[in-house]
Image (cartoon, rainbow, N blue to C red; front, side, top):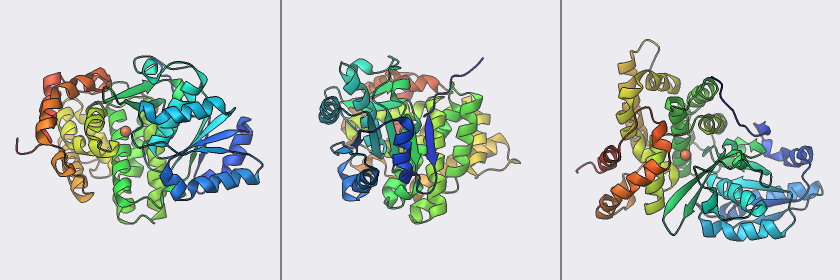
Length: 388
Ligand SMILES: [Fe+2]
């Protein structure tokens, strides 16, 4: 059996990779970019730095800076209008996962008719939108190297998963320097998201030898460096490892799919506005404990790749170390429980059945080594409330 692997056409990786943007645009034959970003990138000066860099190379860029965290159908509409009316030949997506995910949706809607709802899974969106050059500033969602975007339908509160080659950026500039100013909270949330991508890709039923190799490399990079980057944001070695690890984890899950953690995490994010990495982190220990019996060897490999178990450890020992590590990581990186995050317990309990249905409908739980029923998903949600 063979596996289809989809990647960006060009990746520029390493120190100051983002400075190569003019040359990358030139090599792609693009001359009229629209930068898709958010207010934080404008505030930090990243957007104007790119604008200046492009101007120095006689490239006139416009900026759309109104993307929001956890993008919605209405939040991207102004960007779609701007992209449709502005005669642009490419989009530069600058920021964390949300600006990049927004740019992916804008790229398709600007070029093709319809609403975002029309493009949600299980439709495969393989038509080309405007070409995207992604410049991630977190490590990270891996969105710069995935064929997915997530847009929330604010009417149903559903996080719509949209899938296909049309959402893969043509180029990704992977520059760890852009992550040096990330605060510890974002470093932790996005770093655990990347770790979750690598682990889920490695245990996914859709895994393949290529995605395995990327997932293991990602875990080897992220495992020893997540705490370092959290405690010292200026640790360049750790930031560089996290950035590369995050992109490799993105490649891994884009070609193998995520699984139960992401399936259960999206409804929490949609209903309670928990940042994506944080809801993953809340779920990762419980979902891993639930899943280990169906893939003990795979999870033990994860423990070894992360660096907390040795080759001499049995699979059982490695897996108990893995569960201890995931719990310890959440405690150390101050991941709140849903209650500490401020979620009202009664409302969470009321919504559990529909969240379970939404999780199953996304398709991700079907990729898990142990495929849960709706009742089993509810039981895992309940574990997030320890005294219940
Ligand atoms: Fe994720």
